[in-house]
Amino acid sequence: MAVQQLLEDNDLTVGSLLRPGQRLAVGGALTPQQAPEPAAAQPPAAQRPDPERAVGRTFLGRTYDDPVVDSANRHHAELAARPAPSREQVRAMVHETAERMGVDPALALAHAYQESGFDHRSVSPADAVGTMQVIPSAGEWASGMVGRELDLLDPQDNITAGVAIIRQLGRSAPSRDVAIAAYYQGLHGVQKYGMYKDTKQYVRAVKDHARDFAR
Image (cartoon, rainbow, N blue to C red; front, side, top):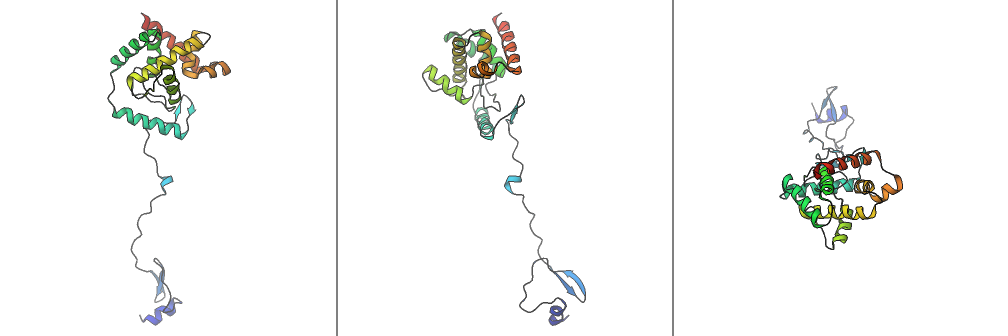
């Protein structure tokens, strides 16, 4: 076919710009212009699924904000990269630390067991870490009480923080039950709102564990 005829059949001129994928009439029939296949499109980064997180966003019906969950996942990764004591070693450390700090060892063991099952690598969506499941702000509070900066990812420091908090709550709360509840819900929260349903369950569990550890 002559070039001029091709131009006339497609209402084109010599200066016309042909686009990739444009169809041309050849002898009255349309045929696709030969062009390389486009590369497969990648979805925008925001639409791509994120890698599965080791620590999720929800716990007992509560959903936590991204910064908290992101911090929890960073702490989870750091704990996974560090050596950790066995559960038996953790139990002995909790008992010794409680005795040294003037806290009932059975109560400290009960909190530790209920919080983590003596697993120092435990991390919750609330960014509570370690054996005693201490959140960063509570760790700062505990650091002030013991007079030095505590590393919540360190097994002994984590236990020290938790036992210091148990000791202080025992001094501040009006009853043992409220002190136990405050470790889970916060003393201000218990005093302002009362114990939530899951807090009451926590108190019962800790008291049961404490009786077992006291035997």
